[in-house]
Image (cartoon, rainbow, N blue to C red):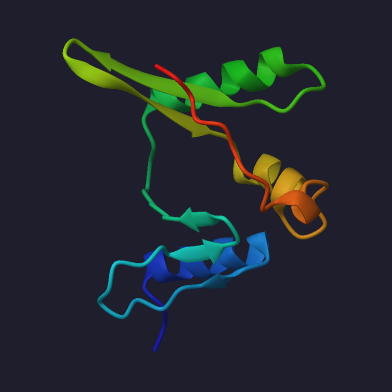
Length: 114
């Protein structure tokens, strides 16, 4: 029996990250337990053009830095939500097997004030 496409995608990403895919056992679990990261994989045939354009601009403008895109959702009367996005290959360079931040992957983070 072959894996469903979404399950195959989860396995491939977990392998690339150096972690294991969480079994889907009907409970609320992340797709991949990656140290301090609880990864949800959302596989789509196509992402919106604006998403690709934002990443292209970040890559173009980054120079020798790591491109990172922050999406903000600002609406009146609702607390601002921000989402960080980067290409998996960039994430792997930082946190994947052999990534230069891998030994410090468990360090804390600071909460962003809005």
